[in-house]
Length: 310
Image (cartoon, rainbow, N blue to C red; front, side, top):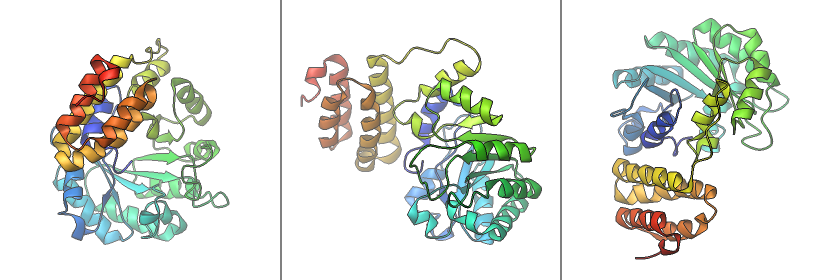
């Protein structure tokens, strides 16, 4: 969720029912530490609840130093990324590429756990590819080193986000370790959540892509898990109001130029849930200033036909 789950998005998800939200992935390379991107990802000002910072890297000492730096700047929990399938991450032997080298995984986890006094958690996939689903073995290794919680995406690195997530491997992991395990992958509804928790016996769920443009999923899932009436789908005006708040927050976080660019992908997701959203999406993608973008949303709220008005 790097490039998506910034501070604005995380707070929005928590307001809609997420119990916590993890930061965007932060590179452990100290040369990148003072860049605008890294500093923005580390900035937890105004964040509510527990502050979890996710780090990525492939060198034990560097990753340990990054963990210390994150704790010094306010992290309550350190999450190690061993699940990202992106080529630019795996090409540096980080993210899910680490699952090919179990010895290195052990060294990385041990270095970070010994470096900080806060809980350390781990996000991973089922394995490198479908023939090498070594996540259960790595889960046991992680527990023995001191990792406090595991989140497992039900796909291998080779799968990326293709096909369907599988939960047999996650269920096996839950049987083999005593620390909490969260299931992740293809959770798009309360019904999905109930089915996956029942099948895996996991302690909780992590939702990622299904929240893009639809933060209401958290409240809906929690209602389903608590045997409550699941909230109705958001109305058109509720979607537009939330979208406006989100876009305004992005402008404030990133500044005018970058904020406008980042906002386009989020509006693209929101408008998938509007029957007439294509009109707004076309105009929004052509808008170059925060004022123009917010005016389009305001006009659209009052009159869909006026959404392209200058």
